[in-house]
Length: 133
Image 1: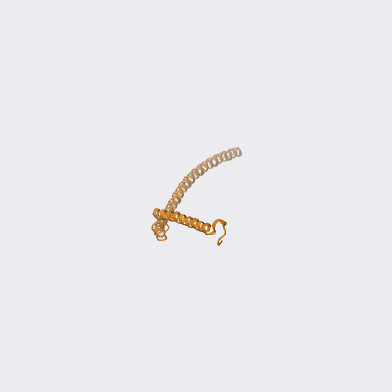
Image 2: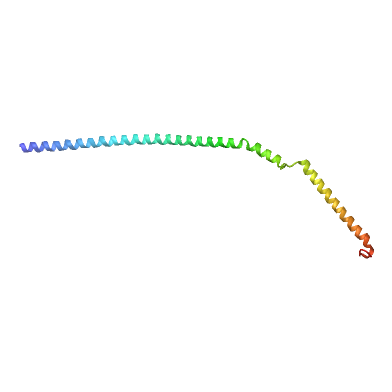
């Protein structure tokens, strides 16, 4: 009997030990799940913070580029206009008209002189067409 009672106690102890192990395992799994959820939430918050920091860095870089461009271009327009004015690269309507009128006049004068030279040659050549006869 004694052995049977000892065997019963051992069986009870084993079943209770298995139950304790199972509850410990379940509570450990629950703790792990909670920890995983906390880590995911922390990682999400870190990701959002990193994105915000990166966006701020990009914005600051754009502002610096704009400042540099503004500093460079502040005098570029004025200097370009001065260079065009001093280099006489501006087109003047009056000058264009004068050049056009002068070119037309010059062409007309050259044509007139050419026709005069032809008429003189014809007059001097006479009816035979040979100069000097």
